[in-house]
View 1 (cartoon, one colour):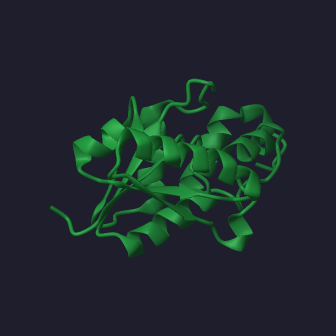
View 2 (cartoon, one colour; view 1 turned 30 degrees about the horizontal axis):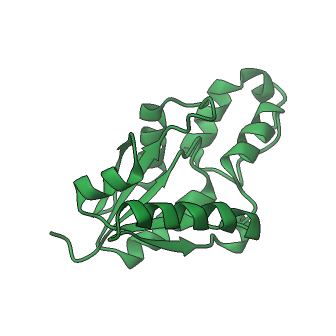
Length: 168
């Protein structure tokens, strides 16, 4: 078994440069990082799970010890199956902390081995969210500073009308 293994869960719809920053930094902290791509039942995803997985793989390139896979069901069950009890979560603002803190405590209550590590993205990515990227892209704004080239290409396919403005 790996000396240190962590799970970075999220919906990644789509993966942003903020997510990629946390993934790259996590690779430096852990021997193995499992990126769990989840569906959020409260939201209708722009990209299906398999496409989000492929976009993450294309965006991060080949890194030893990194896997990307679907996360279905409870995060604690996902952690148990992979014998990975460190969860990485990103914090952009104080408003993120309250929700993430509740989730961390709930996960620990469900599985006492789980520890949550909070990371903040680089300053130039701290404001980014998938929701903002999708909205800007849908309205024809330039999201190239916020996402990888593969995600930019996928967004152009999803929003052809916005693409016709020449901004996306």
